[in-house]
Length: 136
Image 1: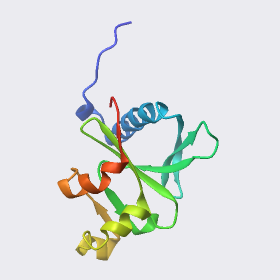
Image 2 (image 1 turned 135 degrees about the vertical axis):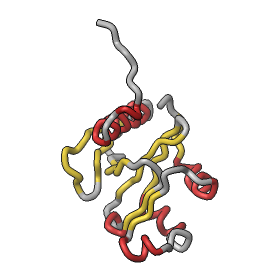
Image 3 (image 1 turned 90 degrees about the horizontal axis):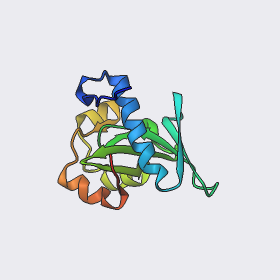
């Protein structure tokens, strides 16, 4: 059997999501986590990461960049995305409390969502403590 690399951009949205999950799960495995994909979002989570210590389990929403949603509040949810070979994994509510004034635009006010497709320098500084260097 000969394996051939795929082009990420050729994948459909669901296949890209699965690809991203496996890349993130591989990085988290280096830190003692086993990641379990959920077939349906559960309390906002796409997957659960279970730590070998038996205590540090987290619910994770996988995104394409920094993201916030009012519907995620008070769910003890982490947001995860990849940028330039690194994984970012941050507590949604904690970071939202820091940036809500900054993201208070029309879409946030009307729909309760905020999303960036690229990591801006402002968010890069805020999320630096939540960057996990990996081989994504």
